[in-house]
Length: 561
Ligand SMILES: Nc1ncnc2c1ncn2[C@@H]1O[C@H](COP(=O)(O)OP(=O)(O)OP(=O)(O)O)[C@@H](O)[C@H]1O
Ligand SMILES: [Mg+2]
Image (cartoon, rainbow, N blue to C red):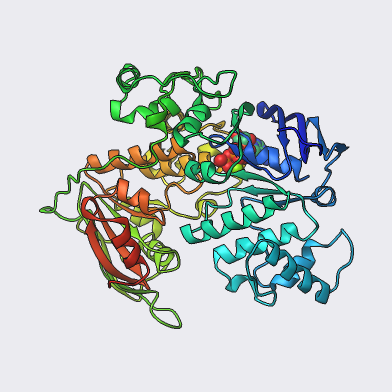
């Protein structure tokens, strides 16, 4: 695309290292006015690092940034804002106890004075620009996630921004909110604005992006127009299919070849996508994949629609997990109202629902972070209702909670976090066997393809790798019942497939799995049975094979109850 105007942003040879790790390796990227430029890549590929550099949150080791033809140094976000760049980061940045207007004024600190009346007016103008209505006087913590994100965008637009960076803006949104966000993005680009859009949801990318740049292990491996691209082709580029000069990709290998490949490296043919993303091998942790599987099978890798499952539930035996009449009262209506769910050994049960209908509370109560008002929880024959977290884990509970950062100790290493819940198994008399611990950690890191050094603090890991650590920890004890909340939030397609195959493996080994997710397609593909949670109550219970999206959608909004 050549225009009379210079590119909105041009990044040249940006390099950023963290110790031995090259997070960005001489990256070139051009964003044109009016373009939605998707930045894609597996977890840990370097997307956030690059955009943080552009926004002045992090300094590159080398490289240069030009904005509209002029070289600029981004020493801080204030420099970036002054250059017309706004960013909504992966973690939201609003102060919950302040109003929308106050948050926007706060954002203006350091770049000129602004009074409350002017801030209010500008907030309304910015909201109109993206076609949404916001209440400038609302206290942020009373807003829904979708509304908060709109405020984040309004905040980014506050300073005459011409390039907006959105880092995984849809990861936390329900489908209706995604639609609104896309409408806003289209309005902005029609106005000549450029948008850098990061997402792991490839169907969204093909819907909204004009150009797609793909990062693999810190390097740009393709930058192509999005028109005509299919999600599976993008996935292939992300994991390493060869990219030919004109921007297309080489023919994918047949499924037969892919299956043979899987078998040759000791994996079930059905786990072929896993094989492509995480080939087994004698790879020390932290070194990364030794070989690139250059002829990836995009069909398998991109299948976010999970293959249909056949339930092997053993309903005759003792349930793996039995939740009976669980009730949790808050100040108003009950947060959980006589919730009963039974998960048989060898069964995956999904809990569907629009967020805010009791999911968080259910997970808290099941995992021992909150005490129910009444009701009981049983794992096998053990009543765990009154047990603490550690005792629950001993009784056979595995947990994968939504709040990743809340489930790890940030300053401890990957290794330490991995064995945290497992220390008793390494005890030798009064001591811990370090050798056994190391071997165990090494095996887990290989099995789950955790791309980090065992001794790195866990806070430095990318979202996807952190999720793999939690999954590894939860599954390493062969739990009898696993409670998994939003198990794939923020994960790349390969990692999602991997998580699914692990959950299915656990089910096939006879455990009961309860998956709480806002992603209906995920539940439909993964689960044997789906229950619907609405207003703290279970209002539907269907076999996944017989369920339709429409029926579940109605139940989720409380209709057809
Ligand atoms: N402050 C830091 N210290 C050490 N390593 C870091 C730091 N920030 C990022 N990294 C590493 O740099 C690499 C790239 O991380 P980055 O967050 O850019 O990935 P990403 O592509 O955004 O991944 P995701 O899709 O999971 O968000 C990762 O291996 C990560 O562990
Ligand atoms: Mg990121």
